[in-house]
Amino acid sequence: MKISEHLINVVARRFPGANIVRLPKKNPKEVVFEIMKDPEGQFGMAVAIIAESKPHLHKKTWECYRVLEGKLVLYINGVPKILGPGQDIELNGRIMGRGFDVIHPRQRHWAKSIDEPAIVLVVSSPEWSPEDHHLL
Image (cartoon, rainbow, N blue to C red; front, side, top):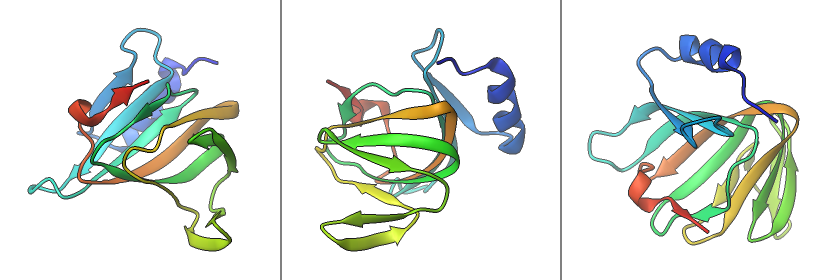
């Protein structure tokens, strides 16, 4: 599944001034729009278009995902979770947040959209950085 330049442009217009990261740079399967960073680096907020991300982990960063549009299979340590807009997420039988899924540091994770690329709000603490994005 490809992410069209049209979709990238539509999302870019929603978030003018966002730093855009294409993963990989050519024919991206994931495009991240960094929309807010705490000046002290304590948290960051991004919107991602995900067709399929590569398995990776973060040694320091926590991430929370909230699907805004589309459907996504989020794999955390190999366990799949199907997410749609606004779903409640359960972990060990407890609701962790209304429509958010939490990814802890050092948890192997990746995502794959269902039918069409999904648009996902990602909140991270500390803010996401390429130095803490370790492909597996």
